[in-house]
Image (cartoon, rainbow, N blue to C red; front, side, top):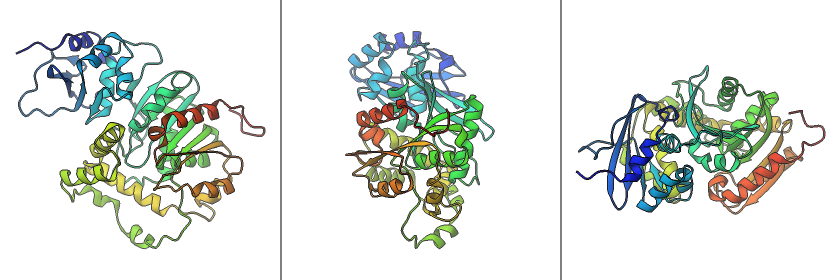
Length: 396
């Protein structure tokens, strides 16, 4: 049997078990060098077993693939793995938490700028997080069906100046998935507050995409003393038009998600068709991350409960979304996609009416600005977070 390429053994020489977060007791990572073949790395309880050819029928938890030149660059440059991943030269499939964790554990980096994949134990349960950097805290919240993966480019863009933490909200990714939890904005806001408490963070900037943007605003509504500034990237907002399906949606129980009514290949094909470019790049990573949670009973129940609550979000009244938005105290930035089919840019007008002091950026992209227009989105975020505090704003 041929020996594994020297670059893979060199990476293992740098492997730091303490930097590798493994949700289960064992992990199998499949490492492919396009010109040389495939090897499996098995990690057990923080220890290493030598690289081996994949045993017949063995399923990998995560797959990493690149050509020989890219692997060699990763081996020479301790920052090369994440850079190659961001540029699309290295692909990570199936389990991003483990794949990126492998890059972090073999980077040889010890300074605060190193990306870490970890889990934080809160009163609700474990919350998975990608974190890096030092400075004022910035917490990032993904959209419905997403995970912290959708914010990895943003983590990289802000880690030079801030302490950045992209989390998997409860019910998604590698975080706790309590059966019977309401999975409404209040539930998620309490989970974010619990995460801040556990991390010893008194006050933070919040950045949220889609449902995560709605959660960020809910934290601002309920716990304004814990939030400095809010960035909503195509945030999910309460519907202003009629909702004729409300009685039916209220009658449907999200616990039905505990049953898998369609086989995995059918679900996977549907999701890949729904997500543009679902076989390539960040879209493929997002599909993998969605399926990893959705194909579990608890993940499906959380997804359906969250989707149900997005539809049922009350727009007006004493506790209505738009009523409370008008009273939001936090300085806010909203980024809209002109091609967004889920949260149409027409919502920007209603937000301007409710929050005249809020700032707005319109981009030529769809529903996930940080992935579809990363340079413009991250430049706007950096300008906003660095801008002077407005007169009369709550102290940070």
